Image (tube, rainbow, N blue to C red):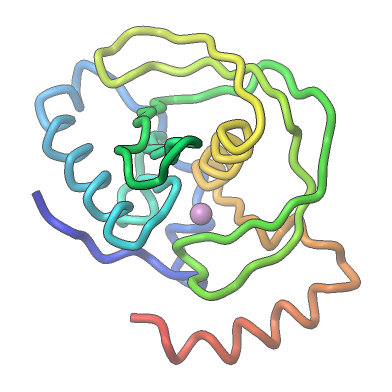
Amino acid sequence: MAVLRITKYGEDILRQKLKPVKYEEIAPRLPQLLADMEETCLAVRGVGLAANQIGLDLRLAVILLPNPEDDKLPPTRYVIINPVILAKRAEKMDEEGCLSLPGLWAEVPRATDITVRYTDENGKEQVKRARGLLAKAFQHEIDHLDGKLFIDLVDPKLKPEVKKIIKKLRPTWD
Ligand code: CO
């Protein structure tokens, strides 16, 4: 396993709409890839990591949902391949951050209850209803696969402030 470098805001691949994954083609390298993504995400206490955040043009992401009872217990892992949001219900403003914009937090609107379809790490199609933090994580990671970042959702009035903060933070990124 390996901790990989995470791509940062300003790198082109974060703005790319990523290529659909052919499960059969990726299957042989999937266990290693997922182990590396999980280790990379855990190393920086992230909740999710999309493939372009480690420089790969693939529609897949890993979500590590913290245990709500005790964050010392292992998180629940969701591997989402070629995910599609089928339905969104309700919306809430909530604080969000991103491993590709370390140090920045901002309020953005997200649906609080969604239904998503994806292929899991075993190649099985799953349809899952998600609420709360998991719903937020699904939407955040699926946005990554479309080349979108959470700062795109920030209130336009607050965008100049966000730009200022990014300018300050940038020299601290690797
Ligand atoms: Co992110």
